[in-house]
Picture 1 (cartoon, rainbow, N blue to C red):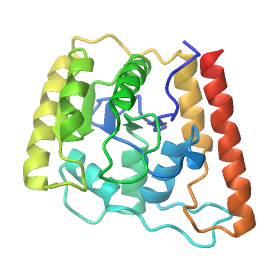
Picture 2: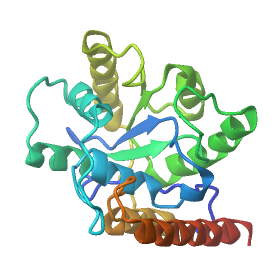
Picture 3: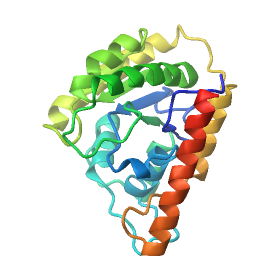
Picture 4: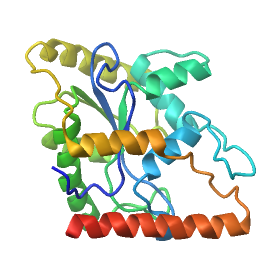
Length: 243
């Protein structure tokens, strides 16, 4: 499989195959936010490098602040409430995969995806499952949980509130811990993971090579240049999917 309906490459950590506790874990959230001109194939690894790992774009005037969204995801999966060091964050995020279900940018938070966007997302998510073969899915979206579970094909799925919506460790952590236990029990019945897919290699490369997003912290000239590059890269990817 080389053609794909996946417009925004998932983050695939360098140690995804080793995983956490021996499990390949796929974290699924809902969507990116922003103007359509900012859509680009590497949006997910760019955002994660900036907001989860605290990395700075080389042309940015300042580093973006790390976001609680990613800290909550990490703390709930690890079932640990503590100060996470830079090394802790790197180890965690390089051990999992992370994917946004909706394959178009939404204008802002609290904006519900259209029925068509959900439908397109289902097809792309099926591709992601085929390529990444996760042993556990953690879905941080209550409204998308039933859909993800139906598509998972028997893979254990932990469904939790989105980190920005009525999120509580006391509720989320036990849900994830229960599904980790089930995934470990199921693992003995699975065949070994063969990472020979062209898409898998492409997504790993996208994760490794993407620069952290600068957000709005660019000069006007650099911002216009970056928008042009994003439009071009998204157009090339969309054309390739139709070829």
